[in-house]
Length: 111
Image (cartoon, rainbow, N blue to C red; front, side):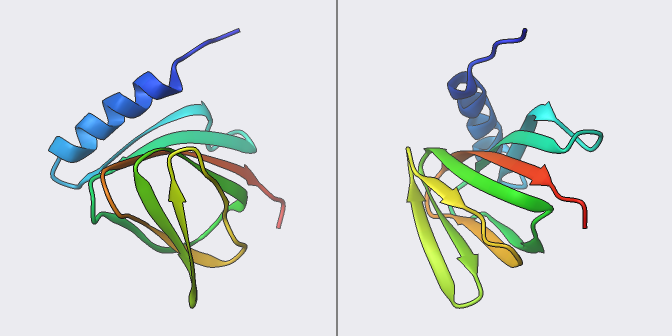
């Protein structure tokens, strides 16, 4: 059994994102390439985005701090601290409206 503070990790990653040159920082807290389930704490400086990409399977974004926009085609959903966004199947992008931290959860599907 392992235990960790997602809030503390989010604060750490947010500090790294805000002070780093890329404006992003992340740490996988569970799973990875060898597992089906993956959970990653990601942080973004305001205005930073993940360009359009295809999700690896079923996925959610839980907003820990800040405000983000999840976009798919002509649709967009805003998520603020405490919100859970269901990532649509297909191409999508994510943009931080303000300094933000999220918990990204994905389950890879056999395709």
